[in-house]
Amino acid sequence: MNKFITIGENIHTTRIVKRAGIRAHVFSDGNEAIKYIDDGEFKYVKVPNHFTNTQPYQQGNLKHFMIAVWKGMNDSSEEARKAIEYINFEVKRQEKYGASYLDLNVDEISHRLEEQKNSIKWLVETVQKVANIPISVDSSNPEIIEAGLSVYKGIQGRVMLNSIALERPEALSLAVEYNAKVILSAASESAMPNSAEERIMNINTLIDMSQKKGINIEDIFVDPLIFPISVDPNYVNHALGAIREIRKNFGKKIHITGGISNVSFGLPKRKIINEAFLKLAIGEGLDSGIIDPTQLNVKDIKDLDFEINKYKLAKNLLLGNDEFAMNYISAYRSGEL
Image 1 (cartoon, rainbow, N blue to C red):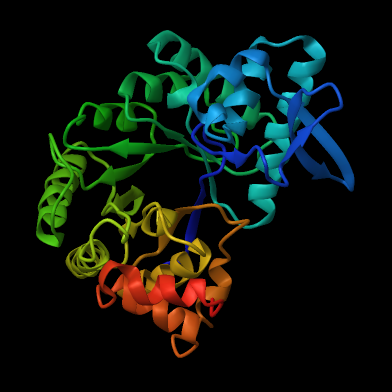
Image 2: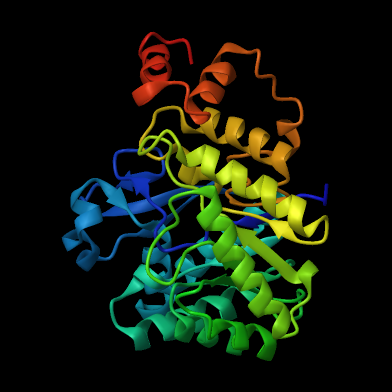
């Protein structure tokens, strides 16, 4: 198998911390902040007042990178400096734990396209000042992707484009123009795939289009799309079947990746499920993952033992042998996990 390539997912405006959790702080005056430790010192990024009116805040969450990006671009010089320090801290943390790329996404910063484009430019420029590894520009909108690609200087290495799908094939031209590695999504022109076969059909079409554009097979990362097992017991088998077939059809040069933590959404003790899924997926040919390396250590996966009860339960769940996750949830409630 290829050396595992970790695409660090954490610098992303969708990411949350709990307002009641250890990453949050309330000052004596009632103002809230994101809290973190850097070089043994507690540091704080204050929550701007207008964020208290947002739905995530009112549901008990802080979108910490959305806050940091907004403050870095718009707040007073001192508050902006603290926000940039926080982003830089996460860049170094992702690198320390083994990320090969830094996946940057600002899509949720605003509903206005120009604000999104300005934000991705700012974030790329900010990150590349301190990063030692290349970035991945992540968006569902090719215009936002192009804005990010346009300001990347390439000092850390070739950029990655995340992602290209049949609904936005024009992004292939951006990959050629900017000499980018590419993540190809298994989504169709109008919907998510419902089987391994649909995933493979969509991916085959995109790979053919990519190669006709002159993109080398070793610069292609295929995302078969990993969906929550809590929604449908067949989802993991669909993804594993697609991974197995893609590896069989295209050999060792192509890369296979995906958002690993998606699989455990909505379930308790998510790390157990994520680890078990990663073990299964690597066994089928996965050689990359869009993950937070501070939470999921790929090096430990080779020693994961499915005879250990918690992993046996997770494996049965993932392979569709635990209807409605009843055994897994019962084990959680009884403290077995």
